[in-house]
Image (cartoon, rainbow, N blue to C red; front, side, top):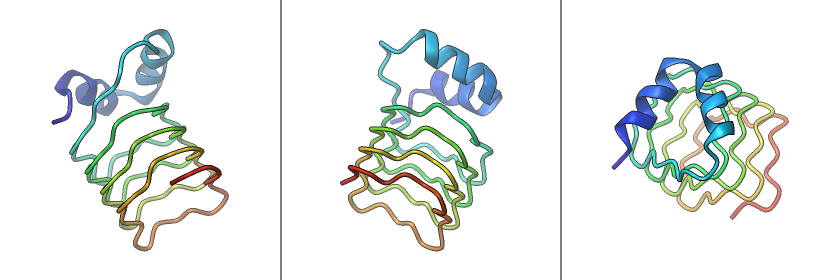
Length: 110
């Protein structure tokens, strides 16, 4: 289950979230099963974040950093992932139905 304080901070302000992430790399961010549908997460630092089973339907993750993120079973229908970096992300059973992956880096993904 998603850590509510992490989820609240992410939903509040992406710039604030990114500053917090930069200064707290030692914290394992758990957004397991989070409902982030239609959220504006453009440019978000989600490096190594656990998004297992998250609902990211129609969310904007353009230019987001998802390097090493765990997206197993995530629902990404209609999600914007333009220019997102998914290098090394774990994508088993993720549903990318009609997702926009133009310019996304998918190197080393599983």
